[in-house]
Image 1 (cartoon, rainbow, N blue to C red):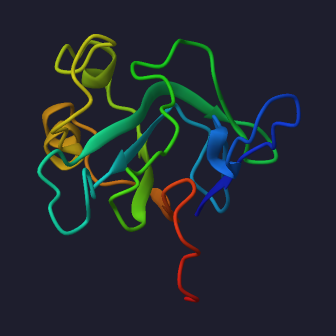
Image 2: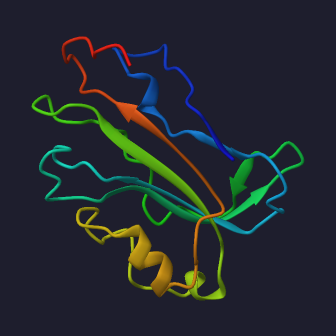
Image 3: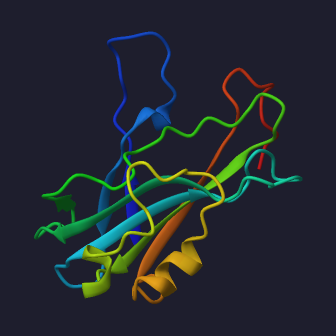
Length: 154
């Protein structure tokens, strides 16, 4: 299982709980790594009309798990964390976080760079092309637009 923790920001104007970046942790017997962590929004610009999906909100490699399962990495992310921010005209978006065992091909991949557009990303195709295979852990969260009407009780 993948756990996410977002720290609160008390030093500026209102920042939603997902102001991030999050801390990642694995539970169970996933090993020590290295791992690749990815986060995508499959609902852009809206869940009804996801014409820009998936948006890549994070992609980084070389994560290792400490004794408590907390993931840390020693290299810059390929795509730094992009705060979830659904448009006001949308309902809630899902943000999916996945962990993969890092393949040898991942370290030398050039499909995604810091300059590559974040829109129209396909995590399944990327994982297949870079030898990542299937994710070993994952989770998701829903985020409503900032200042949207109160979301319905779920």
